Length: 86
Image 1 (cartoon, helix red, strand yellow):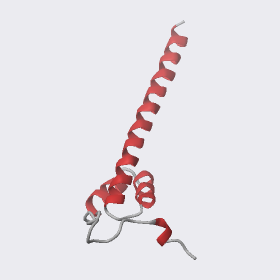
Image 2 (cartoon, one colour; image 1 turned 90 degrees about the vertical axis):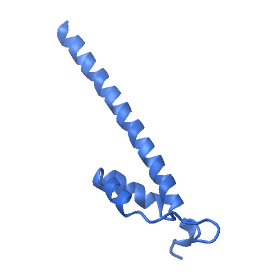
Image 3 (tube, helix red, strand yellow; image 1 turned 180 degrees about the horizontal axis):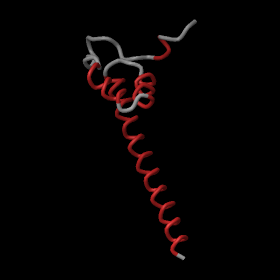
Image 4 (tube, helix red, strand yellow; image 1 turned 120 degrees about the vertical axis):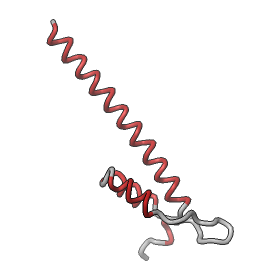
């Protein structure tokens, strides 16, 4: 009886851990997307770097990210259609 209860608890704990990691990853991605767009960089590339090289990718983005772009007189925001090959 104890083995069945122990394995059920292990499965439940693993499921809770998986859900927590997914929520944290989702929040991290949303923050990276917003920050990259505000700074005029590709949100896709920033998210890929942060996810694949976590935690070093996140630290590198926080240390070396450019200044925010001025919307009125500065550079225009990142637009993927301007960077596609013709």
